[in-house]
Structures are given as C-alpha cells and as structure tokens.
Image (cartoon, rainbow, N blue to C red; front, side):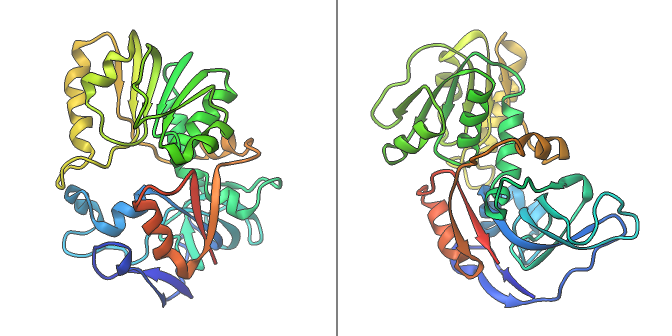
Length: 309
C-alpha cells in the first residue's frame, strides 16, 4: 500500500510516499481503508521530533513509527477476532495509528460511525482537535476568550462554545478574522494590533506563548485558564515549560489553571458527530503531505487540513 514515510526527524522535506506492507489488525483492532486523514500539530511534533523530550515516546535517534498521523475517516476493511462493534464495510471516523496511508489500524473504542451528513474529508478533520476543544471547555463557561482561534483546536473551541451558549471573544491573525467570524465568535480581534481587555470566566490558549501572568490578569477571580497549545517554548521542553509553570502556580490561586491532555474517546466522536459544518479549510492528495505540513508550520492554515487517499 502507499503511505507517507520518514526515516529521520526534520521539516516537511523528510516526508515521502513509499510502498509499505499493509498492517494486519490484532484481536481487538479494526483495519480501516483510509479515505481521509487529519493534519494537525501532533503530526508536526512527530515529524520534527520536537520538543526533544517528546522523543522519549517518538523514538530517541530516529522515528519509532515511519508513518505518522492519528485522525482518519474511511471504511472498515477487516476486524480482529474479538471485535463486535464494527464489521467490514462500515463507514467510520476517529483516531488510529499511522493514518497517513491507504490502510491503518485503530482500537474500536476510538472509532465511531461516520455521520451520513458529513463527507469523509469533513469527518477526518474532527477527532483530535474536536476532542481537545471539548476537554478545554469542560470547566468554565460564560464569557470566553479563545486565543489562536484560527487554528484547528481554536476553531472547534469557538464553535462548541457558541453552540452551548457562551459569549465568545476570539483573537487571531488579521488574515483569519473573517473565517473566525464564520465560526460564530461574537467578537473577533487581531491579536497583533488590538490589546486584549476585559475579564473572562474562561480563557482558552490555543497558540502562541503568552506569559502566564498576562493571561491571569484577564481572568475573573474564580475564572479558568486552559492551555491547549504553545509552540514558542524552548527546544527541549517546548510549550511544556509554560504548562509546568501553570501547575506550580495552580495550588496558590483561586483561579483554575489547567493544561489538559486530550485523548480521543468514543464519547467525543459521538458528540462531534452533531456538527454540520466542521472547519475544514481544504484537502490535499496524500502525496502532497509535505505541502500541507509546510503550510501548517507557517501558521497559514485556517481551521483544518486533511490528506486524501
């Protein structure tokens, strides 16, 4: 089968299409014929091996898994002997392993039936970013500030917060303002030119690396700050540096400070299936994965990208 592979860490130039063996599902696994696979920051970290601490999981000297990718949508090709939830031919979406390929395996608990009203491309853009948005919105509601609202997690956060009735202020780059308005935000500001003001019940930081003290000044006394991203930290710990600082401060304030780690669950997929217009910017053929990753790394993507087989 065709798959995107890499033998070393690096920028998008390390990615290439190659013929690899089709995976076989284990007893409690599902083999999915991939129609579309999501592109997200997790894939960028796996591609680059950054921050360096992440190589404890990705592989120290070289990638442990040659093919990256988690999100997928497609048709069940085969199931393991112990799988009862799905059968060949079922259309599914969710989170799997090494999904930038024509076939990938996944655990049944991380799959859900693809809604009929969504295309495979739309479904593939939702799992990881949508699950993260649901997690950061789990505590705190009312007046919500979303920083980095033009990215994948930010877009879903705006959409889900508005769907439950929050008043949403969104900060993004100038070129993404109109798109973010389309996601439903009540107020959209250019973070490069407009100072942030007001006090919020919930702040969701999806990008950048604003100082923790600055973010806390924008919170109400018992407000909640949730950090869901940050790519501007040091080479060793990356955005984890600020998350560690947050954990150190948290016991000494009435504000709730969180840096949750999202793992896609079937409950997330079931809830996200109600969305009718997920924030998919565009789709690329599988062999154009390097182009998609370059655009993601440069911050030029509004919402989500997917790769199609």
